Length: 125
Length: 349
Image (cartoon, rainbow over all chains, first blue to last red; front, side, top):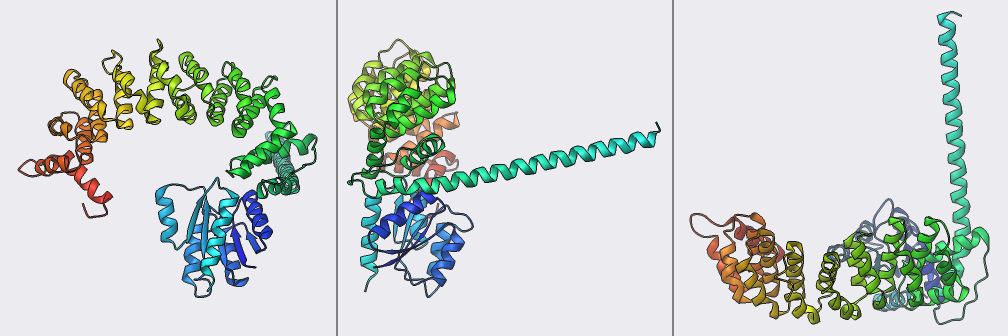
């Protein structure tokens, strides 16, 4: 079982991703904004994966990703960005901020789970 | 009655009005917040049913039948989810909605009075994308409401059924919906609509021809090239411009010679500008001499497009551009195009 942090301000997406991950046997912490994501990553860790939306209140997914990479305790968490921003420059900005994977909305829940599985497998020593 | 009394009463009345207004505004705000809160709570209650379908598309799902407000909100929630997921999860949700009769109900609602209800139903049908909804949506294309017609056009595009092409082009003929919206919907019908579209290139309506040309260009329809070339000598300047642009987008080398011929006989600068750009997209070195000549055109859009086209030609164009920026009077359009390309290539201009 892995611990996954989800940050998305849209409860429809958040609950769907939470359901899928819990169905797969993972423990999930779900939050609705960027600040809460950073706080949870710091205080409720360790996490094996973070699934972040980009356009969130208070702090964007890109900023959250940068904040995670800047701290020793959260640096190694694989980050999967799940966002409606589909332009090349957005994808580039996501990877430049340290994201490990990028999924564009509307998304396929099955594809998301495949990518989560790969990201978790890669992160395990 | 003294002046002071009148003033006092006026102040009292104004103060009273302010208090009443403030109170009313406050109460209505609180009511709105409570309504939104109740709505969110109800949405939270209904969400797990839809999430279960999306998370397990292969399973058999029996959702409870909702009535009244719950039924309305369930429809809204399902509608929202259709825009957020794709693949088999989305298909499973559409299947459940169809089995519950939501789709048939929406088709029925497109016949009822009330533009808002009909438009909402059309949006839902478009998102569900089931072919059997086409007749209901096509009927809305002749609605008296402009907004409703636009919704129906968009929804038919989302449906992606190539059989909707003639009805959509008929809307172009009637000019009852903005042409770009129709073009976007027609393109969404996909390559299977090409046959119908190519036939409509011969339409007597210039509006239908324009939309069709744009759509075929965006679909990069190689099958349409020969027929598009026959439109280049047309008397309608806008149609010629659109056709040249479409041929550039398609990128078939058969278009090079007819476009060069068009440059020889057409002095109108908008045509020349678009043809220059199209020749660049076609990438034929045989266009280089005329594009070099156009670098000195008096109209900036023509010279700019010629310079961009020369960049697109690769080696054949790059040498000409390099030569144009040397000497006492370097060509500014060539210099700008080279700088832009250098930035795109990741180097310094």
